[in-house]
Length: 477
Image (tube, rainbow, N blue to C red; front, side, top):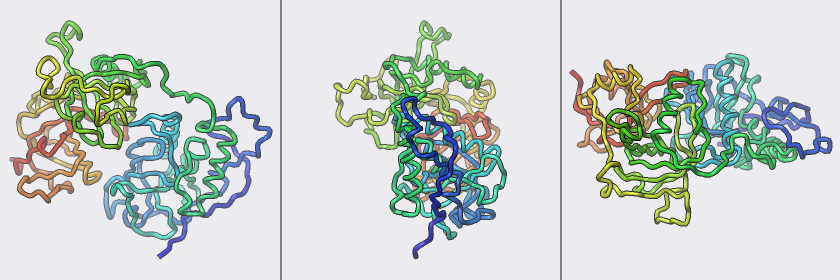
């Protein structure tokens, strides 16, 4: 059955203000048509009410902001959870902003910051609604990944529980600012006129993507060899002082380290620095997390104990802390030394037997809790093993492969990024419900990391890499 579109374009020429990007100095605006604010002039309006609706049942619902990913992707927590409490992973309909994570493109960072600013304002002071693009209620259908929903994101930055006719479409706003190209709107013709009119206007005014300007956050300069220890010390400064501005933020770096783990598109490297180098009695370990992008990479780069050299961009992430990005495409199947920025294997796992050999910190559960409470960063982003069994007191399932476990009498959490199979004798039995974990005991290995919640709290986690890193021992005592 065909469904009607959720909003109707009304192409009235109404003057407005440019928010964010401004015309370049070489643009003669006197020869351009009068600016049209398509976002606020009624060209696009929400046609059905969201009040009392459940996104997973009705295809529309009010949301709390969980995490901003980039300019056209964000994760939300549904306010009404009668059907499901899983996070809504929204891929914004009709737009394609430049990349700002695994691969970094010009204006990608600006698009990401614009989206983050609007969503955080709406989360703090106003209203966020996520919907499909139809005007009848019905369960949404995920995209080809099976996890994300192609979505319209409606916001009001100033009014809580704003009426549905007082919301504006963030998707269109991003295009109007010149921070995105229009993509895949021809499948729904009623969207096309407004979206393309906004893009053409941004192009005519030479805003952001369509300008000849260098973006404010575009990294410049050459790649410089940087130690994991220096990056770690910058991370610690950020953790102890949120106002600190890292000297490495947005810098091109070359790092070397041993693979400690790989999960959920994150590669973890760590390395040892002697007492002479670190100034720390007995020496010091340091690690970092590297977002490799969404494309698969050869396993030779992800094998534990492999010693790598990687070119990337050091950036501070609001949610994931200090990390390395812009490494997508730098992991060739066949070594190609003619591309200087490709990742290089300096020692294979079998060859790496001396000073760079992977070290695993070992703690009892109470010792690791003490590490957290004392803000001891000796093993941050490094491999750890908890030597006694821990018991789960609570669990939160954001999705089938995104599960947070809260450990009884401990300060740290466990963050699973894969579907967990607890019983090795039941290969098809995956645990995806909180009650399956609560009261159960496990032996734990993983990477010791931290995460900043949407409320601004820093929580420390152990991230298992495979099922073998979280071994079920049965019900707790």
